[in-house]
Each structure stands twice: as structure tokens, then as C-alpha cells.
Image (cartoon, rainbow, N blue to C red; front, side):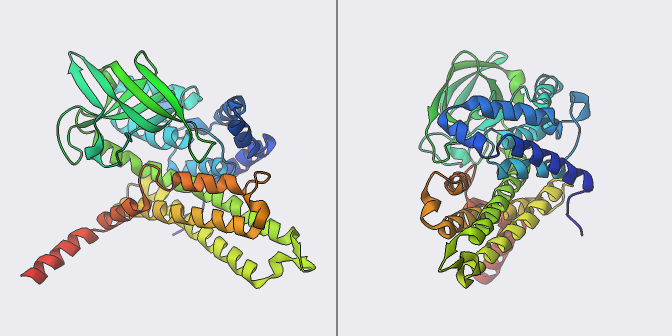
Length: 387
């Protein structure tokens, strides 16, 4: 089975690469770190003009109606350039959830604006001192006629124009009583910028104080938010894996190029066996990550039975491989790899940021076991052995 990209997809990749080279690639991230967010906004607008933001939106809502595989070039190239923004959250989480579970009014309101690049959407899930476990959700939405009154604080929220907030609308455990509600920046919504390791990320603490939201802003059925979110996270993690592949591809190129030009003992360090072996191992990790990513996106697009195992296999492997490659790249560069003059540190910070983003590697491996029915088989063996 051939999972390589089509000719049209590769042509689109070439267009994206040319544009990002023109704007300076990681220069955009560096300007963002300095506080100049205008450059990143201009680049995002340029990517929208190329049609990137319209890819997953269906045609009735001014989109192109394409699938996850068509987004791979976009996520790989923006990952390679470390473009700031919430492109993955918007295009690979919010859009699929709206397309599948949103009402017609929600689709008409948000999807055309996302397709044009006018707005972004992110997920408000984690709460201070809590984990990603559903029982940790204390942000509460009380029904008041046709509205919900929401109170609570969400932390480590990627900043966007619209927030998909996971809130508690009823008592329950293991995901029961949770709902996903679309919240805009209205009265009662305040944001405080947080400092995180990856300075190319704009992350905030989101405070919701008596925020009145119409019940029509609920995505899917009230109380079914946890199951809906788990479905959306499959497309999100597949896309995030592609973004990691793009970054890893750039890391391998950086390491190989530096090994050619860095002279030690009157010869390039790339001639030393230790460096050769490390770069080969980096390349093997990269190609494994790429294969897992392609298959994960294909599985999501085709709704295969093994998509859960495929997606989380990609997410868990790529997360660890990204950290490993970014660390090895610094080792190959030596002392200069720790300086801000070159991009090594930017990639390591991005890798560490993704390490526990919307779930840990350990959690992903648990999802793999569930997707393969290993946990059920283990329980059956235990029953037999006890009997």
C-alpha cells in the first residue's frame, strides 16, 4: 500500500516552502519571541491566501472539502519553520468537530471565517493543579433558561479568537456530565498571558466570570462533550504528528549540513564514525515518524477500525523522537548548539512543549492498547488464570 503524497499535494508543499523561505522561515518565530506578533499575523494571512485554511472546510462553507492527507504538506512545512499560531488546533480539531457535530447555525457562523483565515479556534481544557483526566474538570456551566452561565479558570490555553471549552454541565464521573461549548471573547472573559518554555507559543490563563453563553453554542449534545472531544483528538494528534515530522526533517538537515562544514582535526566532523552513526539514527527516526504520521492521517481520513491505535502510535513515537532528535542536534553542534545564535534551541523547546500537550506519551500508549483490544484480552487472561 502506497501512502506517499500525490503530485498535487507535493506541488502544494513546494508552494508553501517557497513562501515560507521568502518570509525567512524561523525569522518569523524569532520576531514573535521579541514581541513583534505582527509578522506572524501577516504570515498566517499569507498562508490563508494560498488556500491553506480552506483545505478541511467543506465546500458549502467556502472551503475546499479536502481531508487530513491534504493537510500534511501544510503542517509539515509550518512545523519545519516553527510558524507561531494555532493552525493545528483550528484546522485539525475545531473544524472536524464543527463539521461532524456542529449545528447548521454554528457551521454557517464559524466555518466560512475559518476558511478565509479571519478567525482561529482553540481548546480550553486543562485547569490549574489538574490533569487531562475528565474528573478534573471543575469549570461549571449552570443552565439559565436558554443560556449557560459559565464560571471557572482554564490554564495553558493557546490563544485564539474562539475557544472550545470543556465544562461541567452536570455531575458525573469518567467523562459524564461534560459539554463542549464555543466561547467567544465577550464580557466576563479575561486572559492573562503565561510564560512557557516554547516562547513561540502564545498561551494564556482563561478566566470565565459569569459568562453568559446561549445554549446554541454547545457542540453536539449537552453532556456528551468528553466523547466528542476524544473523537476530535484523533484528527488533532494525527495532524500534530505531521507538524513534528516537519520539524524533525529540518533538524536532520541542520545536523547533516553542520557536520559537513564543522572542521575538527583537519577534517569535517561528519567523517567521524560517532557523528555518522548519530545522524543515521536520526534519519531512521525521521522516516519511521513520517510513515506513522502518513498512516495515521490516512486512517483518520478513511475512518478505519484501527485509527485509534494508528494515531496514538504516531503521536507517542513522534513525541519522543522529536525530543531525541532535537537533543542530538545540539550535541552535534557542540557548544554553539546551546546559544541563541542558531535555531537548535528553538526546536528543542518546541519538542518539550509538545511532550505533554493535550496528553502524555504514557496516555497515548494506553490508547494504543485500547485500540488494539489488548486491555480486554489481558482482562480475559486474568479471569482464566484466576478460575
